[in-house]
Amino acid sequence: MDEFEWRPGGGRVEIRRAALGAMAGAYGAAYYASQRGDKV
Image 1 (tube, rainbow, N blue to C red):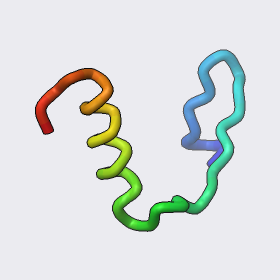
Image 2: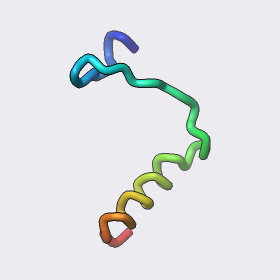
Image 3: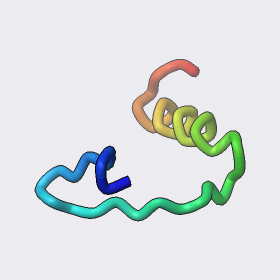
């Protein structure tokens, strides 16, 4: 990951297994949209 990871300001990113499984990204996107008032 050192070659590909984007580190704004030199910060490090922790990589972990998604606690919500394969749908974690979809859940996060839906939650984010609901907080902004966007229609999902």
